[in-house]
Structure formats: structure tokens, C-alpha cells
Length: 175
Image (cartoon, rainbow, N blue to C red):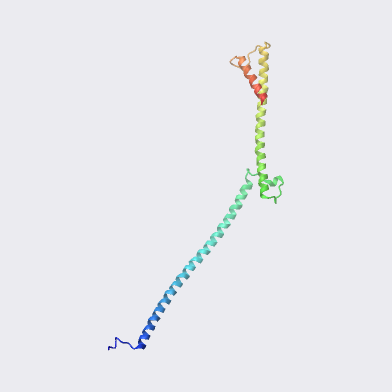
């Protein structure tokens, strides 16, 4: 038998242990490399979390400042009445304050509409007085009291004009 083909048992055991040792060492190196990679990934994630938290805090402060500015603009708006000048207590519920604001806005709108209608009424009354005066002049003209041509009806057709005035007068009385 040749020496190379047959190794004594202690050499064989030693050779097996060396291979096992090399395998364990290489597994250790792989595990150490994985651990290092995971630590690096954890550092990156932690830095991302810290950056995200600081960005979140900045955005929260910005939101608060924008909310404050928006509430100031809303309170300064002419479309929303300030309830403080009406003596509404500050601790009134938001629903109650909103309802009161709605009523105040409705009152303001109706008040302005009423002012417009009063102006129209005054114009209609003045027009009615003029029409009555012209009608009276036409009736007296028709009866022969006054034969002067009126500038109100330039075409000279008094009967048509008189009929028109009577219809306008009846329409005004009906309304």
C-alpha cells in the first residue's frame, strides 16, 4: 500500500477538523458581514426617521401658522360679521355662533334688499304723482277746460295716451 492512499486515522481526523474550522471561520465572516450590513442599514433608517421627524415638526409649525393666518383673515372678512360687537359671549358654542352669524348675514342681506325696494317704491310713487297730474291735465283738456297741447304726448293722440295712463294707474293700484 502506498503511503499517500492511506492516511493514518489521527491525520484524517485532523484534516476533518481543519475543514470544519475553515467552514466555521467562513460562516463567521459571512455572518459578521451581514451584521455589518444590517447595522449600516439601521443607521440609514434611523437617520431617515430623525430627518422625517424634524421635517414633520417643521410642517406642523407651518400648519399652525397658516391656521392662525387663516383665522385672522376670516375674522377680518367683511362677509362674516364679528359676533363680539353684538355682545355674544366668547364661550358660546360654535354651532350657536355659526347660527347667529348666519342670521346676521341674512338680516344684512334682507336689509339691503329692503333699502332697494324702498328706493323703487319712492320712484314709483313719484312716477304715479306725475302720471296723476298728467291724467288730470288730460281729463280737464278733454272736458274742454284747457285746450293747450301738452308736451307729454308729442304725437298728439290724446285718447291713446289717456288710455295708457288709465291702464298704468289701474296697474299701480292693483299692486
